[in-house]
Picture 1 (tube, rainbow, N blue to C red):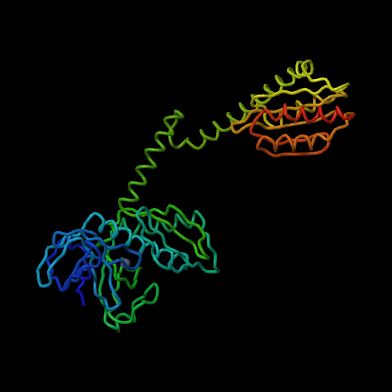
Picture 2 (cartoon, helix red, strand yellow; picture 1 turned 45 degrees about the vertical axis):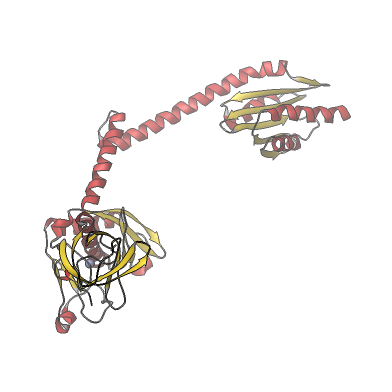
Length: 404
Ligand SMILES: [Zn+2]
């Protein structure tokens, strides 16, 4: 079986090994087995290591059920040769930081919330764990999140040692493991400080301080569990820096400090709402003023006057008010529209004494111009893609009046 060098020392970056076998798996992809390897095979939620193997690039590393480690690389090697290998250390150390951070977080969840962690997902951008909490709850409070973060970062600040070892059976039975091991033989234990013991075959730094920083960035229900998403090490630092820069930029835009940013944005929102309200009021007042000229230019259908007008930015509420005002007097039909980004809003209405179903007129006119709408016999609203719907509606109304 492949001897795994990282079991003894997770800081091995370069090593020499003997090629046991090499077969071509696909065009230009070779499957290689070594007598010993420090390359980590994908397992326990931690992705494989990359790097170089005998001058070729590592494409994938995995372990089979028998425990052999298989390397996929882009260079053909010869069995029996001794080859130089080098791990992409930036990627591996980042994985070690996320992995050890996960142990401490899962340990804190267990000690402080009696939660059981199921699995780790170590992603390209962030990592997550799924937690079963007592009573099946799938949410935690902000105070609980802070408690977990404080606990983990206290372990980091204290730089507690991280030890990995294979205890004998008797010792193993006495260890306060967070959860039962998934294997029965050669159980490898990772111990962090004196309150986190867990069976694990992964790679970890030798002390908690090297994890640097752990920050929970999301907590939400997921498939009956609570999913905690977090960042460790340089990932957490980069996140802090990005947020810092973005906060500074936003605060500068508002000529304030980041501490006042939320209050400033709230004040800005309130001012904008107020300004929008006053603008609408002014537009409404202007709309009401135009009604007399709409009446002057209205089409004459016997004793009925049908006024058309396309407003600009009045909104549905403004249209309703303008139409209501227009049809207050007898013998009137209002065919009103208001321009929007995607077409027009429509509002048709008639005075109480006019005998026509304005809801049907609107439905037909909206439909003819790619929209929809309808309403009662005296008041209707909708939307269409073009203001030509007004002329169309007037023609329909004229046809009805011609029949009378
Ligand atoms: Zn581990």
